[in-house]
Length: 254
Ligand SMILES: NC(=O)c1ccc[n+]([C@@H]2O[C@H](COP(=O)([O-])OP(=O)(O)OC[C@H]3O[C@@H](n4cnc5c(N)ncnc54)[C@H](O)[C@@H]3O)[C@@H](O)[C@H]2O)c1
Image (cartoon, rainbow, N blue to C red; front, side, top):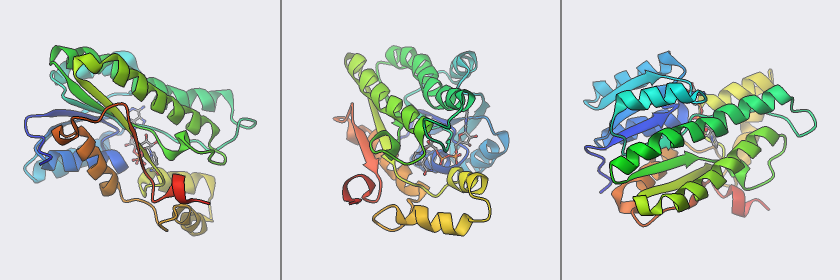
């Protein structure tokens, strides 16, 4: 079960955190992994880890918010069976104090970046008679998180995009789903704690861990396991769904 042999998989932001865990697991399952990254160092480290384990992987430098860069990378990759729209950035702020430039920056990477990859991959998947797309939403798409105005807006858009793509390309044999993690312990989380709460890192880490009813953050490998299921042939009956993976955050926080 869950074999990805002979599948060509593109993972945006595949050099770090959740994307890295997905890259490593998918390669282990036999996929040919193409990582699209802004950060060459983490991309190379991940590719080298996969090669050292006998897997197949390559990295491509591109900014997902630039459509021409995405199209040209997809052209050099060729066949794509699975797209993981994972690259994303965070922002702390509410609707009153989020600046126009911060709002635009979040939307450009999180929303336009995902759209660019969808725009580029759908013709490739149609020519290949099908494919699987997994978008990365968040619990922020489903509940009112404090101080995450732009980020929540962007993840709500990812949720809606997933439904739209799943509907429009049903007859092309393209499945499209999303996942909604609560807090996952990745460099993304460490980075925003360090930037937004200097000197209070341990206290905030503890608070963020406890905000999941299960009492901790997720491990990236736990998110990768759900991604593997949803992208595998075993999940062939699943499309147009969002899967919370949240330690009870959405349903048990009362
Ligand atoms: N970590 C969490 O708690 C959490 C929770 C819910 C959802 N998510 C979502 O999961 C995804 C991955 O998060 P993570 O925590 O693994 O982040 P991360 O910062 O560890 O990794 C993200 C990777 O994306 C790359 N990237 C950023 N902008 C890019 C761009 N414009 N073009 C190409 N690559 C780019 C970065 O270089 C980085 O390597 C994001 O979409 C995030 O919103 C994370």
